Image (cartoon, rainbow, N blue to C red):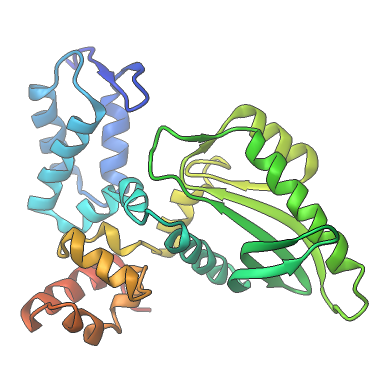
Length: 280
């Protein structure tokens, strides 16, 4: 029988720990039934009232890494996205790649003229003659939530560039909609405002079953910070070389050698990337 355990979340709130939720997250990462049973049993024997969610995560991750590296990599996705920082550019590149998978043509960091002022747009996407201006709100802290002030600000910028773009008779496309993407969550007011003004919102788990995590898993667009075969320093050296996605490493042996990886380690990294993102 599972005992009731109250844990401390990163936001300092207490919450009843759900073993069922833990099971689902392990299955979602690719762990098989036997491995999930072993991990859940191990954690059941070690948890206690007041334990932090970070400690539980580390216990599960360590066990996964020992027995199934690919599952450990997928399990670490949320934290791996935080590790893309401190700048927001790698996150913008990830969002751009996600849109390309969905059939959009994309540009990252685009300067657009507005009626009032000039704006830098994080990602500009085009599909079937419609243009979408996407702003990315990257947080390095999971406790940060994008409140209503963020979409209010983003929508006002969008309206400024939209009026300028659509009034230009030389443009053969239509600036249709603004988007706001974050790696954490939106407040309820932010979501309601987005719906009201037709600002498309995408967060870690919003819209339900179609949030950032669901899309990354669906297209296997994992950031290199998920990998267990690279050190933290090596990951950031590769990000500095503009390699953000696991898929990009499959053709980046020269870059890995440049940052000091031996042929043996490169092969280990490539094996992990192929398991996470099988070549089509």
